[in-house]
Length: 181
Image 1 (spheres, rainbow, N blue to C red):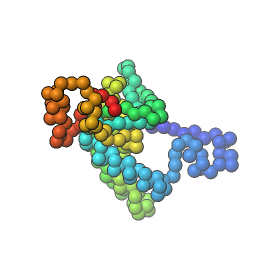
Image 2: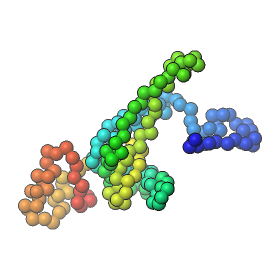
Image 3: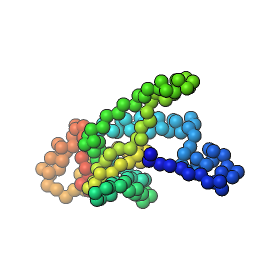
Image 4: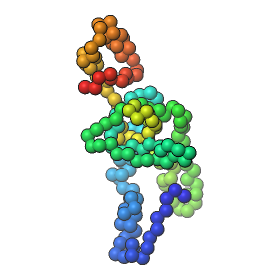
């Protein structure tokens, strides 16, 4: 068991079960929540296999603590700030089987549902500033867009600029910007 909820007599006075559960962060599924989950899952399935791709993240990140029994620590990035990260999913070699045997539920009279296992939609990324692995929910992740015009800010000989153009032209990967713009 990873989580338990305990109710006391004073907790349930003048309160419905959904209200109690909402207080603990559990919500009854509705069409809006389902659509939001489906959107997150779609983004997750697009981003997860892109090993080495760069992303910018905002909001909340999870990072493993140091030590013999590491725990996940929640860190909130300051509002309006982002961090650059690289997809590090390949190191985990994760494979997802989202199908489930619903025969138990069918035997209890429930005729539909329970065929799919929900996904958590967290990406395993490498934080380029902290030099550590982090977990970030896809709602806080955006693809990093390389800005070719930033090369004009570099103080480099012309030959080096040509090399940068060659390295970044017609490639399926993104280069880290040297100068933030």
